[in-house]
Image 1 (spheres, rainbow, N blue to C red):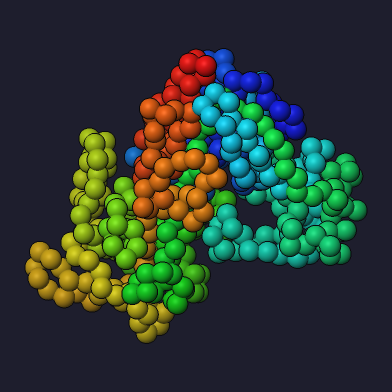
Image 2 (image 1 turned 180 degrees about the horizontal axis):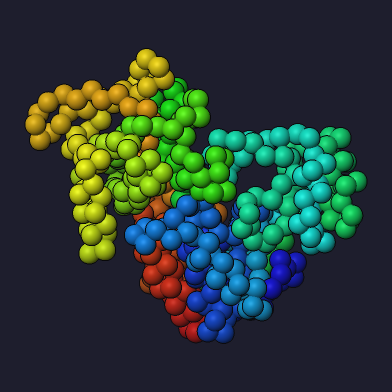
Length: 424
């Protein structure tokens, strides 16, 4: 296993995206005997799952799944990967693709031992994108504690500064290479699986919900990081404005989803995510009151329905069926949620300590179309053309899905990629 610089053998399957769908696709194909190349834009594999505190409905940490997958990758010589890499162009046909890949500099080579000396030497701090900007980290950093590969990164923001020189001087292993530059390589592949994942919808675009104007309005993924032990607060869910423990929390469902002005579709995961987040809050704050404002609750399947019923039976949790009209700041940094209860017909104004917006799931390809001959929906999801074959979308690149569905779909797309090679 290594980050490779050479071209793959003919018949290789390329997987674009190293999140849970990409990892599953790669492992399923490699473990039945096919060579696989993973191309990941981040400096680490793991994708969105690496940012989670727990999976639902079992509520186990993502480390238990990612750790096993990383071990399988390390043990499988058929899998090679590039991080900080992006596909620039795809030419060719099923069974014979030529792919141009841009490799961006990490400024740290394979000599890195993870000693942390570069971080200690660095003085500059930059926004921590892994924690959605809720804290900062040094300009020389390990992306997160489970990062794979476990190699540090020097931010481009400090290249050319004294901080960068300090990082290089502090490294006893000659691992810091400030002369690294971006380059483009050409690879061949017989089939390509696009597992480019998803982005949280930009809640600042939903003007009536107040995100970005008031600090105590956060998103569901921000709450996920707050609840994580390796998050900005060490796992404590605290109000951003003053660091205090919230005594009342409101969840606003379908924040951007099922809205013709934003995301017209149901994002599938948001309801279950908020139910999961309710368990985080109830565990930390047994006396806290939780309100969930929803249009419809979606709990697909027996296990999810059972999970929903458990939350619904909690006397500290109130479900309010009604679309939220406005979220505004109240006195004392409180937040007021205004909605109409569609069951009683009454207008509700509820003031709470913290509001969590259940923002929707948007495919990464919506922001910038993938550089290949693919079909897309109006919303940016890739439409699989099985008759044409050769290139396929897995997981959330194809449709909104949770981790379990993404894994199942990725296994199917690995099979489709293999069938492309067999037909050659």
